[in-house]
Amino acid sequence: MNSVILTTTTRILLPILLLFSVYTLIRGHQEPGGGFVGGLVAGMAFALYTISNGVSRARQIFPLSPTMFFITGLALALSSGLLSLFLGYPAFTGIWGEYEFPVIGPISTPFLFDVGVYLVVFGISTSIIFTLKLKE
Image (cartoon, rainbow, N blue to C red; front, side, top):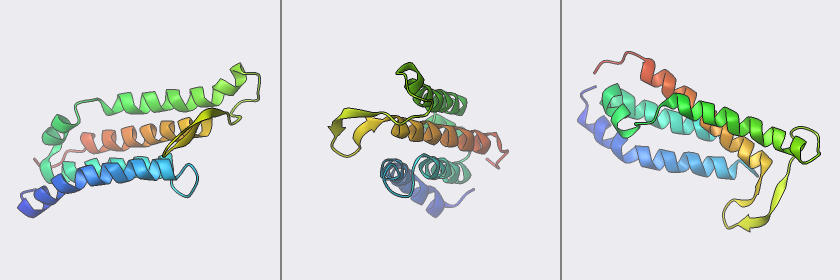
């Protein structure tokens, strides 16, 4: 797309939308939101950037493979559920740490599961966007 306004606005909106997606991930641990919604916001931020600047330019600012994000997310979500088995509890039992972080609170297996879902949704949505044949 050859719109100067869209290209400039997207360059400004990308970091804001990514920050909002992380906020949605952290907020969703206690309130509505979470990994799925945060991953969608991050994926759509890159979709907007890709539509306005092209796939090659989007791959320059996102050099990692989207496949690695959803593989890592699947591994994190699965390991957060199976961690309780190793500690003698039923699968997917919530386990909370004792130390509280200022914004996040205590690290727990439900939060790690949310982060895994975030990475899966982000990886799949960016993979779909990067495989579309958009006009350069």
